[in-house]
Image 1 (cartoon, rainbow, N blue to C red):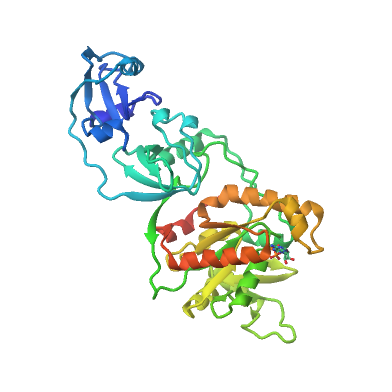
Image 2 (cartoon, rainbow, N blue to C red; image 1 turned 90 degrees about the vertical axis):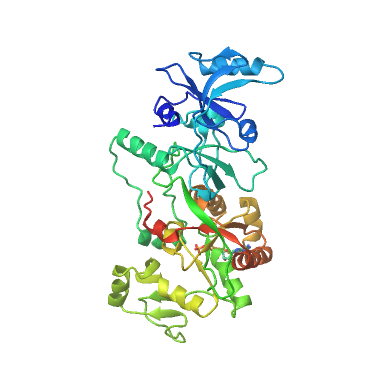
Length: 429
Ligand SMILES: Nc1ncnc2c1ncn2[C@@H]1O[C@H](COP(=O)(O)OP(=O)(O)OP(=O)(O)O)[C@@H](O)[C@H]1O
């Protein structure tokens, strides 16, 4: 066991950060070690200090037995050159391949009592893209944020550490029957009636969630021969998802198409089976449900409606861009390697702006506040899955934004989950 691992088994909050290294005291022997070297920091750039090195002297003063804070004080007070005398630990090779991850939770090191050195920690939010630069410590990785002005690295919990803390938290909580799991069908039913929020079971800590901390992503550039990526629109009921989808398809029906849904309602005059809907019996519909044929299904006015995976694939196989709208809790059903969905969140403008622009007489004044509230809750819970956000203010501008976003999704390199299918099994509360 290397000194690095020995010291990590002690109590947390014991590392102290100075000059881009964290140091830690072994309480049993009194020795002080370099716990980790922060990538891109002063010590890392010097290339002279490595995790596990034993610190013997700082500017001629012996450090054995001193508290790390005392060592730091000495360093802070030093002027000019600082002389470290260390007994080197044989350095372990760093990652040969950088690993890229997308954060699935919000994390703040200052609120994490488990982190060995909060000052060296890095906060991140759901959806942030992270480059993991050092995984040598199985519990605490070093990462930097992509697309951030700061090139600094910081400590984040590894996936192992995250799972361990989740389990610890789970066992420490009293048993509570969960009341807020809603099946797909129920939310479909209330879709057109301004659905009540089921998101009130908020989390108080990033560990208090069934999600993974981050998922691996890779840079994907669609090849000309690849099928188009599936476009998924998500938004609170009433924001205008269907309007945008309808307009997009109407403007260019040769490029965009929606899947043909299945229904158990009877065919009306002028309707053609396979054009407006695939009309099926209740028995056939039930068979399709049991065999997991639907991405989303539900009941409306006593009839069943459903969007099947096969009808989405039919559109894509014809070389057209398939555009669907989906309830956020069904996102996992489309996150597959074949579909490579590009997920666009449609956000409402302010309630005042909606009052001015929405002329539909079905809207009541209070609806606009509700749409905004539902949007905020939806975004807070699911934004890690959104590739793009469009504010549906002026309808023409929003159509243009949607068109640009779709082009971007099909033609430019994007970060996509490295292992899409694995996430289909993720459970959410
Ligand atoms: N940008 C906009 N400006 C003005 N009116 C809009 C705009 N976007 C949508 N609308 C109108 O708002 C109403 C609701 O839109 P739409 O049916 O597309 O909502 P939705 O998000 O699909 O909600 P639901 O799922 O409940 O149908 C429609 O009358 C639509 O024409």
